[in-house]
Length: 383
Image (tube, rainbow, N blue to C red):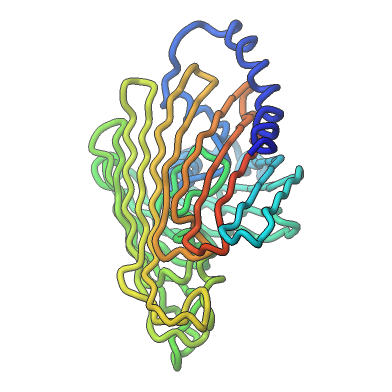
């Protein structure tokens, strides 16, 4: 515990010293949470599906500025550098505690959006993460005009299942269970001046039922509503929860599932009192996986994984935000903590530049996995 305190203090020291100095240069007012999150700089390291959709909406709604090819192209990117420290305490008295730490580039993204003609756009996102360079997104978007607020997205994309809104550096448990990046076709329709968005899609998942052909067998549906400014809620369905990126690695035999297990997600976010934002989400399986299908082939219990995450953000000033998290899971084994809570400070000290300091405590269902204390500092720049 002393080592953890030393690590937290060492990472917090430059932030705590700088905050008062920076605050003196600011007008002494409470910041607006909407202004903070719409600034262009990322808070934490997690981008929700709502943020991705808003990004695409801005691009598809923009006009072509000229006839030259470079007038039709927008290039942007993201660089995240992280320093982290983790201490894992095992429940087994005979097992020694483990301590790890590192500082490195966590992620680099380079994205390009191209207006082909009116109503037709192309999007490519190349990403570096964990030593690999790969195509994260690559799709074509077709949009209708004002008289037909419909759209079609075809290609590699994050399917509209879950929302995963977070101001933390570390992914929420809901994202780890449900985020799915696949080749897909998604069609949608916006109702009532963006008061609601309905989307339906098809994709080829990472797992197959025993005896099935290698075909498109995944389906997704989502509905998001904004009844008034500051309130957003929605629900989504996927026919195969095991198709999710991180969760698919926990399937013991991806070619011989007994059946596809569907998943359900619900989320809500509410901005209130000018400076607060609440975010809550649930993701879970609608049926049980058979014994041995996930985590461990020798497991003799059917599993029905579910996860939840809740965060409360407070904008101290226009540039400084504090967020608390409480999350957890059931049947998450070593993939998801049974309980998780912590806090993060985000400081946007320049445009498109964010410094985050995060602490998280996690307790896992598997006694052998124990409890974790994690401290992460992240410097992120968008361009």
